[in-house]
Length: 274
Image 1 (cartoon, rainbow, N blue to C red):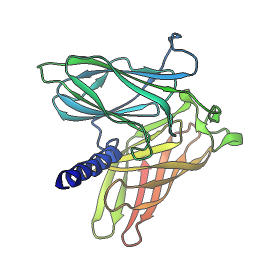
Image 2 (cartoon, rainbow, N blue to C red):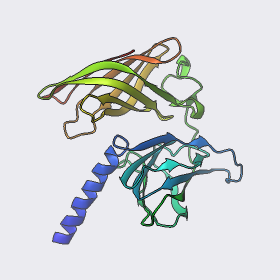
Image 3 (cartoon, rainbow, N blue to C red):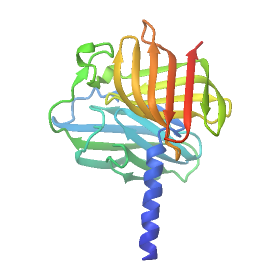
């Protein structure tokens, strides 16, 4: 009984870790579109190729890869590619295959609702120096194709999924503040915004405390001048609210505003691009 309770506790810990992995990732990159034509029709495939020195945990969600370094130097991309992004819905025929690597490489969580449809892989390299690792994720492509739009300004399909080559990324310098009940004020500087083809959004800010302030959520509306998203902090406080991102004529974000609450505490955030 005690052993069963311990395993259940470890499972809860791992699921919590999986949920916050993207925010605390040391490295993040977008996988390129596969140009090979040897993958069978009806099969989704991602070949993730990395350079690893030490121990890392890798999360693949959509066409984004997040690497959290446990020991050694930060991992980096070495030519990863997918013919389709990993679906953000239940997956049929999912398979993990360790193709190449001198150390331990294993799947610790399949994509599911509990992991926000991320595949989680742990790599442990006990030898000195950097080494190449290659693992493959594959699945069966099922159902009707997801609705897509060719550009975020396509109003006729505003709630569709983002097309592969039009996922949105913005990074820029700026200044702002966040004020949270009971915690006081933080100064904000650089901002980063990523939206994947499934409409998932990750927004993070550098702060004067040295600890990033980050939010995860989903895009719920947009037009040529703005994006609206439902976001929340990935911590025990779980402050949630509507974030508004204003864009200029080039599509660049120049202002971000958020009011969030958990019913007790409140957060107000206001950021402007320099």
